[in-house]
Image 1 (spheres, rainbow, N blue to C red):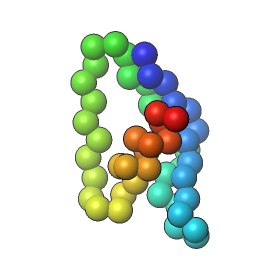
Image 2 (tube, rainbow, N blue to C red):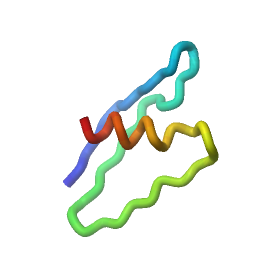
Image 3 (tube, rainbow, N blue to C red):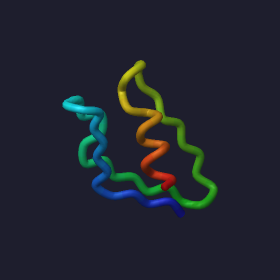
Image 4 (cartoon, rainbow, N blue to C red):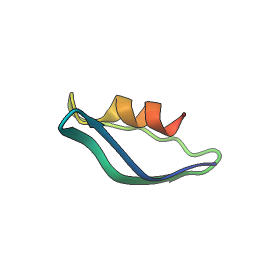
Length: 49
């Protein structure tokens, strides 16, 4: 299981993630979609470190 709570990320003055919570259970398939600049990559980096 992967569980993240209250994740936030900023780049300078730009906040790309704010209070993100997610729980992924074993066997779940998850896709993160969003436009360019919406915080997909920062979320994946922050949630796996």
